[in-house]
Image (cartoon, rainbow over the protein chains, first blue to last red):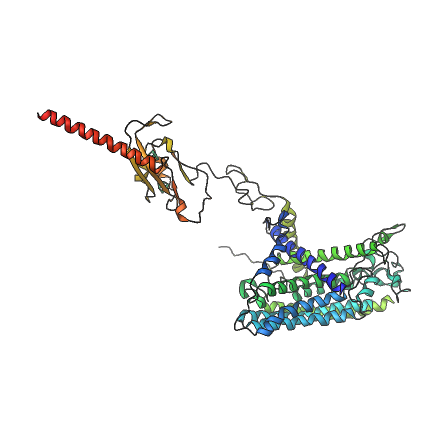
Length: 367
Length: 200
Ligand code: SF4
Ligand code: SF4
């Protein structure tokens, strides 16, 4: 229960920061000022937006399928929020550390699609329906390259446990039960003869342990943009043609829940990208001889220092990725539906399959 | 006309290069966001340039200064007005309403030395009708009707767009009217007396 409340509070605060950042980043990239009135530099703007949404009337259209319409936002948010349960925030802090976390995450996020379809169908509105169908088609398609990219990382790590994957990517590897005698080699190749187990830092991140995962990371990042309905894959929302996609009929608290779910999805996919490819809560600074930067910036497991350092590195890497998502939104134009499907099925999926194969071979080299 | 063939770039590296250059462009704008446009006067050479950084001003707090010869809200310096009615006559949209009352004696002089002989109990300009042509300011003999640099004077109630420039209260105006009527009566009486005297 405590984990639930803490995660929810953490998520809400990240989302509020993100919503504010989105507006400021958008404004700055378009040479505007962005919010300036509410609080210093408009920093209270997103808090006030949420308060405003909560005060609004909760309208349920007369022709809507009421039970579906009412249930959908809760289901969508619950599906995304449930994904956070297996995210390791620090070396010893996981809301629910289960052994098959990656598998669970993929499964629970797919539930999101059901919620979207319920929202679109329940609204009894052609724009909502079209938006929901596009959204579902897009998410279902992009789950394949995303899943394959994740599979490549899982094959290299030989684990479905997010926490174990995290430990593998840092200098603390041998402290994880079961990994006591494991070793990291530079680029994962033992024959190079450079042992990086105690060097840690960026040299043990998955994208360095097996450089092919860099390709997997790019594929995963592109697919994750599509999964969270972000530009340039935002055709389900397409303000200019579909008004706002599946949530056009929603208002007040239900809209706030959908909005929250969307931003939570962005945070979740970035967190997963960081954990699987970019070293999770591990520091990027390696130990160089006597200068053990990695140990200094990791803290001692089980103490407050490791919680603070772990949280700091995880969140700062996540925010870098989130910033990239925002920047991409304000840089690239939206793809057409056929281009979207072309990219997914004819480009990303074949590459992802090849990456899985190469990752398997790499793993053989690593032993 | 010369037709140029556009080289279609579709190779993998071309695409990557163009994606990266797009990101670089937005990043450059993001980096420049610490610079702001400054409210310069129109004679400044940067006035029409788009400088680096944010181009918007926080309007009610900051505003671009308007040109001196711009035509914006009218102002009448009623102390200098001789109530000659020229502005009302020239106005193409008839938005100036002047009512005049002759003074019983000379009221005073304007700042340029013209004698004032008329009161203006009503001097209204309807800014909602005004087309800011500036004709009234050109004809005004004492230069008391001028354009000010104020352009943001929207009102919720359109009645407030009618500007009253008179310096007389209704009571004072009534008093002046009565004075005039009395003077005219006296003059008429005097005239009648003179006429009667001549007849005899
Ligand atoms: S500026 Fe033109 S329209 Fe306005 S009051 Fe003067 S003469 Fe009339
Ligand atoms: S033209 Fe000038 S002096 Fe004459 S009535 Fe108008 S404002 Fe007064």
